[in-house]
Length: 236
Length: 94
Image: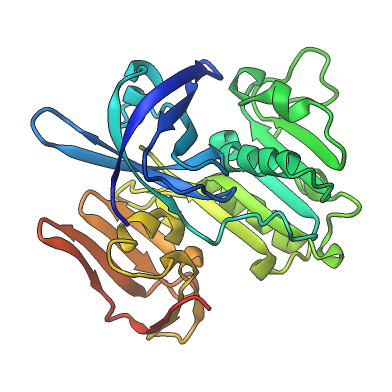
């Protein structure tokens, strides 16, 4: 798969550390929800750095939408979250991956478990489901440190038939929130209609430690390992 | 000393999806859905479910069951090279 030249056409802050970027990418074929792209930056001296980012919206040719959360001291993300502006050019390879993908014609209930910016590929799945007018049962469990870290919370929380959203705050909860800050537990993952016996398709995305903890809870509940798809991300 | 999700060298542990882009330079099929059989323990699973350590040079792919090295992917100036000596076989997705 070859590299495409991409031009930044829009940026929007979504949290104090994360930014949504829209790129115009001639030759880029429409992606499926859950797929990602590689973004490549080239410094004036020719040094290149490549990182993978999940797509936050899919289905349109020649257009790439990502949400990038800044990794302190990262090589690529600080440029994307602070510096990049409309007209800037970079390179894109993709769409990539075919495993961590939701297909809109799959009727199985879907349980999405996100840690931090791991919600980004799930935004693409929610948007694709809405765009297709599907009523497939979806439950999204989002674990974030504080309310400020919640990416696109207003959109995620807006009513959508068949979609159930559950937030877990690990360091600071919103005022009046019914539960104190705490880590994800088994109770967050048990919901009628989304159990192992319901044929649930489970997707888990987040930092490696989160993914391993959540996957342990899910398989402990009886979800077959083959029905729990994971995508880990690391420093960038 | 290492914490969950990191190695002794503090390289994040990722999964096979992290190599989808570089492997698209080598294979005509979508590599993360290809099945790889471990030559050490015989476990066979899709590449997306393997364990990957990324470095500036490429990636090391390990069996999720026995941690044996399955593939080593190196980005060379003259092209991407994949060492497959730890894999009994690789099967393209159906």
